[in-house]
Image (tube, rainbow, N blue to C red):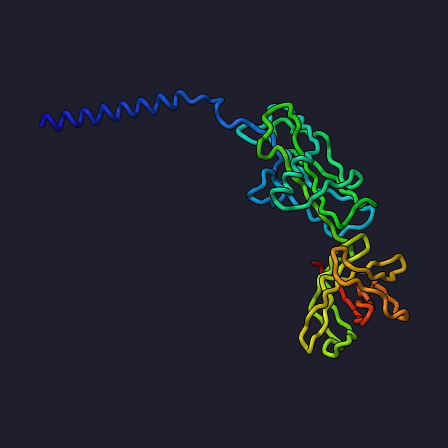
Length: 303
């Protein structure tokens, strides 16, 4: 009986000691030792960077754009942590080309910094007292320097802040963007092919084909369709249609290769009909034994 009482007393003493320790630890918590507020770039949409990337990347689809148009993408800067801003906080920003170079290496991309005539950002922003976030604009202008063939990304860093600590992980961010011209989209392609091999000759109606922006007034066909013995296939030629001021169309080829198309029917007028969003095109390739193509490309929907 005595042994049981002794064990109970020892157990009670142990609980008391543990309770004392817990109280002591809680009482010793430093109220200023919590997560401090950090100044950082907050998400603008989804972070589309790979897991290997040191920096976040946000992408903005500008949609269909025209020459001279001015649009904007959001830039969010936050004061993140346990407190709201106790004062107005001035946050200074600058380009971070080193961050973009590292990003291209780690993510296998080829982004370039847009010209200053295309892209402008504020050199400083203010997070207002009592708040945690400010949102400002990055201005995008479809100027003469805007190159639809370039992959643009604006790399920014926070160089200083009047309060708080600059984030190690989100103190720099990559803002990428892209736009399409008004001809860009998915087209139903139908027409006729003349080929030295009779199996390739005849009329065809293709599946819907992507036409991608290659310039302010030009689009490139993903691949030229045709029928091979009744089976839909494609030639290894990638024509680019450039719409001129009078809606006539010049046919060239994609800059990344393919068999260069040329004019084969001088009596046929390559043209674009804006009322029906339709291209009427004739061209050929392989000058020694020409393959002559007549395309009617009817706009169906956006890509």
